[in-house]
Length: 355
Image 1 (cartoon, rainbow, N blue to C red):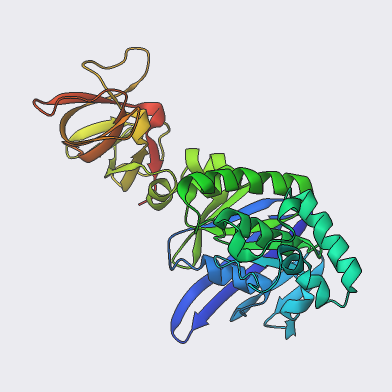
Image 2 (image 1 turned 180 degrees about the horizontal axis):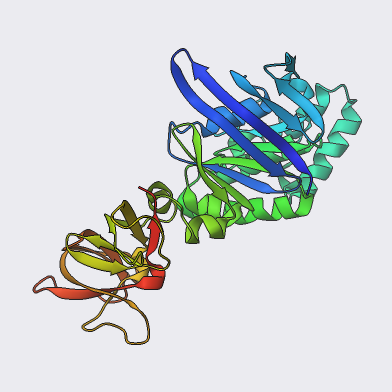
């Protein structure tokens, strides 16, 4: 598959502070890639570097077969010549222009005549099911409508790449869910290469073909949404993407379990040096209350004292103490907080992770 974007050795420093450290990344043509991570991980800096709004200290960038930037070879294609679309958290719609005029503005600065740009702007609005808004002003639009207009404006000049910097973060929860569905349909309809910056793991998992998880300026893990969620490589990846309990201990002599505070916890697949420090990640929804071990499913039965019970609507989040440390689980029923219980940790749900 052809790469729309290729990054090699991208680093960025502000004085002595290194905010990006030796990033290598391939973005496939027509894919939806998310740069995921907490505030300060470098994801927005990386997006700005791809778009030309910032420059790396080291490394090179290619769009397809075209070299866009190289610190070594003194190549730096200006932002306006990279033909990328940008949508930011602030949609930056001109308040004195109608929706149609806002969408047509990129065509105006490219020299298209008034009739042609109005025609193309209205065609784009119709294609995105926004035609009824063409003659309204931004103050007459909801937040979700403004977000869609901003995306229409970025698509009207047919960019080869669409860069999105947390464009859904200003929307309320229900509207954000609908916007995700709409954005997914836009990607499928246009077949455009999209790179999204987000701190919302649900957003990244639901939209992306490829997820890039960043931490402290480095790529922690990358892959498909399912592989990132189901096969986290590190404790950080397990806890940030989907949340997980991470139990720490040492690898047992047989390599099939981790021993933590005297308790041996069976895991899905062994590995590593016996006696070495390691962790096990297990999702809250994989844990269940049980009085005895499951004869049909290998695992570990652990004493559990419930401490906090939260009702989340149809399910309870239960946090309690065990010999392994505090554990959080999801249960369809609420346990009583009086008396010790037992919980079952299925071995096939206990994944060994790097600490």
